[in-house]
Image 1: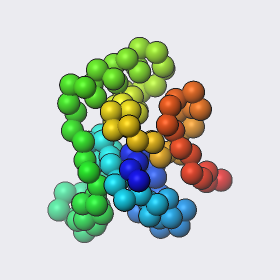
Image 2: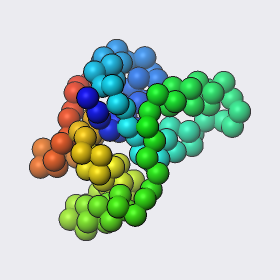
Image 3: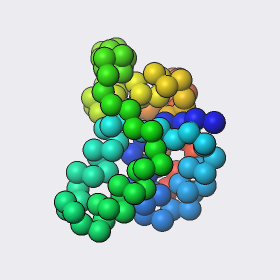
Image 4: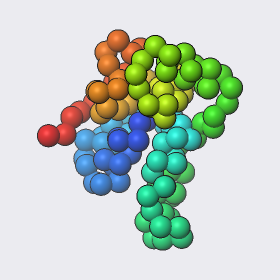
Length: 123
């Protein structure tokens, strides 16, 4: 099975949350947007141990760059929904890949969005 993962699920995994680990283990093909890759790395110091750990972790994912098709889908999403452009790009990536988006972000991604999976919530 294939899935696209939102940044919050990967942050949960890196923070040691067991529910995130279990969710990741369900999928043979793990995909992220280049946006998620950037969001995970932007806050860490260059050449730090933390950066190396995150990059090693990210090696298991297929990372999709911003190509025209994803951009066009994201534009259409953004025109219809009041969400931030990075979230529209991440959702567009899941649509392009025809795979569910695994996320905890119920504010921006709702049941009306096709293929959204909220595997758990944190209190």
